[in-house]
Amino acid sequence: MSDEARSHLFHAFRKVLRPLVKILIRAGVRHDEFAEVIKGVYVESAIRDGIGRDGPLTRARVSLTTGVPRRDVDRYIDNDSLLKPPPPTHTTTLTEVLHLWHTDPVYLGPYGIPLEIDFDSTPGRNFVELVARVDPKVDPIVVMGDLTRGGVVLRSGERYFKVVSRTFVMPEPMSPAMLEHLGNTLAHLANTIQHNMDRGLGAPKRLERSVFADNGLEPEALEEFDKYARARVQQLISEVDDWLTKRAPADQTRTDLVATGISMFHYIDAATQHKPLNELIR
Image (cartoon, rainbow, N blue to C red):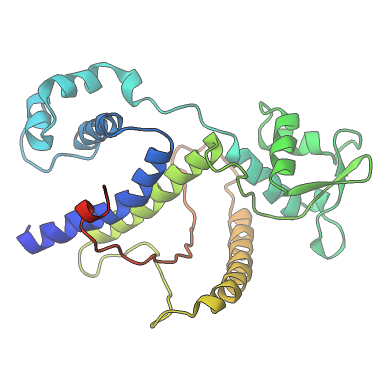
């Protein structure tokens, strides 16, 4: 890699890491704690994704290639708990419940409008049975609590509930569900870009599209753009969701099923800070 390319590589990672480090600092995570996380990522990636050199995969080679001390390489290899992920949240269940409520004929009225349903009284069409179809192990009371706190489901009268959105938005900014969403979304985007970078000329690439104002937008136009983009993206998301539903595999126990989907991003670039760090600190 040329010096110029290496400079752009480091600058790209500084730009990517800055908002992430901002989250870490607000959460009280120090640099030394984050450095331990990075060590584990280097070791795991070198082993799982290949270290790019010929020869047998050994602990010594992992240490030499990554720059991680051999004692740390041994520690991450020998102690599985250091890289073990936390238990998953039930965000996927919430999304699936909303999906079924909007697409299954049992829960739809005239013109495809989702029906209001009770919690557990109407046989064959109630919220408890809806949740059980998605995941019988999840407590429907917990699911209803998350959906109502998020404003996605509202109470209608004394017995019934109505769904007002097809999309679940996590209401708590630092909740486990939101942080799980952060990791999944950024990993999906990064994996797509990395995949497209690794493809040779003419090889198929994954969908990655952006549209932006060539010369920027006036600040007073941002709210109008946000409303327009939300409406158009929601329409596309619903159409794609319907398409995926029609193509759902009959045998969901197959081992070759591929987890896939589409994410879209609306971004606003903040003004770049060019002052030296020693001018920004007392």
